[in-house]
Image 1 (cartoon, rainbow, N blue to C red):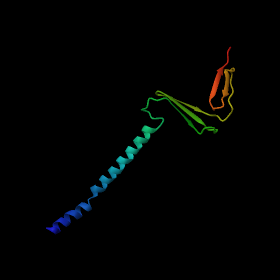
Image 2: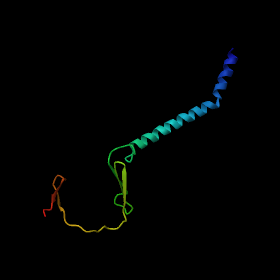
Image 3: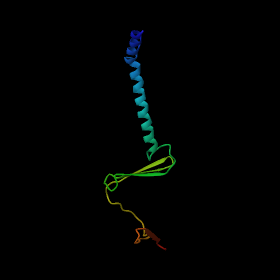
Image 4: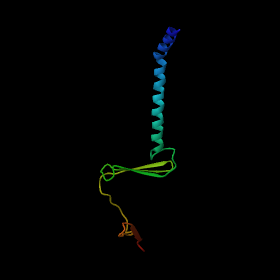
Length: 107
């Protein structure tokens, strides 16, 4: 009887299906980790928050991505100083405590 039990145990140890089951478990863990990474991403397609992402800030190849609802806009830096038309809108003052106060220009 003990010989028969040993043969049954050896057959289970060499079963190739057990290896496949272990691989499936590993893939399920990897898939769960990827889903968590997508859920925590600021550009998550299922989130309803408005998000602004700045890549490479201050560099010549800086890029700003703004998501409002389902609309995503990308702004890429040309590396040049911008110029345009406009007028003075007001003055900003930095206070002793580090806060900023903006005083709009009266027209």
